[in-house]
Image (tube, rainbow, N blue to C red; front, side, top):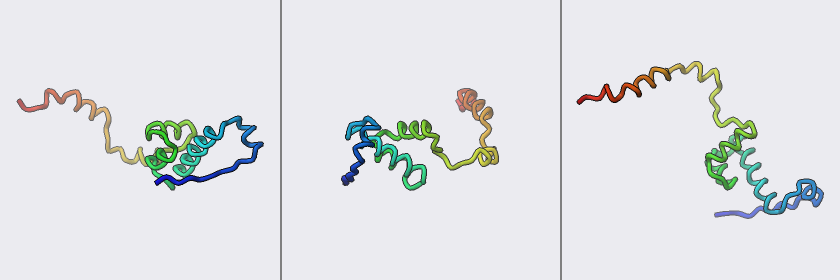
Amino acid sequence: MKETLTIRPPNEISKVLNRTPDEMGRDLRVYGALMLFRLSKLSSGAASLMAGVPRVMFLDLCSEYDIPVSQITPEELRDLEIINVPFIFSLISAWPYLRPR
């Protein structure tokens, strides 16, 4: 169920931003979704629904506004060292030769 939220910005704000009411509504939905995602109040899927854009586009918007989409730190990634990418690629390229015939 959709709910309606009414926001009445002062006339000066509308003039300064030079946005139509529809454009301001869209902007506020997107910026609100970005902030709620940043604060971990919404998942990326829920935030993309709120923003009214596909999830991939929402993640692109996160990148534009320097909002991290993962909680994993670079140090944690280095500590994992479980995945050896060159080894995996060598397995993938050798796959046709490894299959039993």
